[in-house]
Length: 582
Image (cartoon, rainbow, N blue to C red):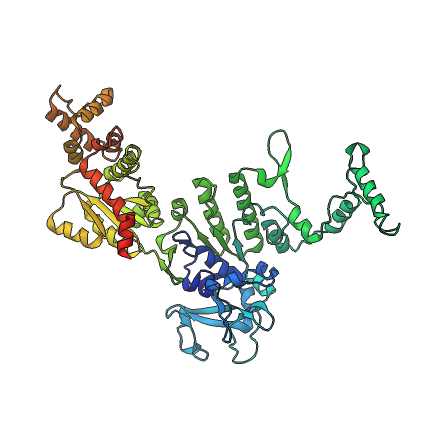
C-alpha cells in the first residue's frame, strides 16, 4: 500500500494543497511551511487513533479559524487521499469501493471506460475523503472519513471506519509518540500499537487498581498525617450524622483505567548500579534508538505499513539518522519523512525529495527536486550529495567557484563579525548556505537551478570574460565578480604585507620542499612564494587560515569586506529602506 497523493482544503495553515508522493519521500521546506500540517492531514484521514478524539476537529483546525458564517453555509475541511499498490487482502477488504488509477494520464478512470485503457498503466486504487464542519444545530464540530466510491448523489456516503483505517496500516510518528510516550501504555504509543497489532488485551487493570485502593499511606503515627485525618473525622461529626465521613484514609490515587494508561511506563536501569528509572530519563540518543527498535517490531508484525515520521534527526547523531531512515524504508511499503538534516536527505535520490512552500494566502505548493543536469549519478552519490542537501535546506545560497572560496568567505564573515559585530554578521547568522560549484563555468547553471527552487541565490567568482559574466548575471540574483583572475591574487594584493610575512613565518618547518622559499626582505618574492603555497593548498582552507589571523577588520581585503557588507545589506534591509518600500 502506498499513498499517491493528498488534496487538502481549508485545514489549519493550508487553504489548499495538492502533493504527489513518489514512494519513499522526504518533505523539506522552511519552518512553518506546512510540513507538519500535511502529516496531520494524512493522519486525520487514515489514522485510527484520531477517532479516539471527540470531536476529531475543533475551531483551530479551520484555516484562519473561520468555521462559522452567520446565515450562510459554514466552511468545510476537506482532505482526500489516493492509495495504490494494494495487497490482495486489502483489495478483498475494500472490493466494493475500488477505482482504477491511470498512471499515464494521472487521473481516475471514468466508470465504463476501463476497457479502453491500457491495463499496464492502470491499477486498482482506493480513494477516501475526510469532511469536517461546524454544525450550528448541534453546536459542535462534526468530522468523518468516507469512501469516495461509489459516488453518492444523495444520502450518506459509506463510512471509512476504524477497522478500515487499521487495514490500511498508517502510522504517524509525532515527536511525543517517538519520545516521552514511546514506552508508555497511553493510547497510540508505540507500545500500545504493538499490543493492538498482536491483539493482546492486558489483564492487569483491575488487579492494579484494587491494590492501589487497598493501600493506605502514612498510617504510622510518626508520619503525623494520621492524627490530622482523625481530627478531620471529629470535626465532621459536629455537622453531619455519625455514620457520614467516617474513617478517612490517605490513599495512593483515584485512578481510573484511562488514568492508569497514562501513568504506567517502562523503567530501565540508568547505570551499572542497577537502579531503575523511567525510560525517558535515558539519554535522547538511547530513547530514539529504542524507538527505532519499536518501529522495527511494528513493521515486522504488520508487514504492510506506511510510516510518516517528523524530523527523525532530533537529538540523534548522523550515523543513527541514517540507520533509522534505512531501517524504516526497508521494513515499510512507504515511508514519508520531514527533515531539516542534510544527513537524512543524503539517503534519498533527488526525485524522492519534495520541496513545499506556502504563500501568504495559505496556498501550499510542492515541487519534486529534479536531478541536476550535467551531474553524473556516481558523482552525486559520492562527494556532491551532502553539499547539495545542505543547499536544498537553506533559503539563501552563496555559490562559489571552488573549495578555497567556499571556506574563505564564511571565515571572513565570521572574523568580521568578531572584530566589528555592529557592522557585520556571519553568513550562518544570515541563513546563508555555501555551495561549491567546483568551477566558474558551473555557476550560472547552479544559479538557475536553485533560483527555480525559490532560493535567494548569491555568487562570488573570479574575473570573467564579458560573455561568461553576462550569463552568470542573468541566472544569479546577486552576483559578485572579483577584479582579480584568482582568489589568491586578491589576498596577496589587498592584505597587509606584515600579515603575509607573519603567516609565512608561522608555516615555518611545514613549508613544502617543492616550493622555493622566499628571499629575505623581498616583498615581491614573498608574495610569489605564498601564491604558490596557497594554490598548492587549494581546498585545504589555507586561505581561510590566513584571513582568520586578521586582528583588525581593515586587515581583511577590501574586496571581501565590500562583498560581505553588501550581502548583509541585501539580506537584512535597514529600517529606513523597509519604510520607504512600503
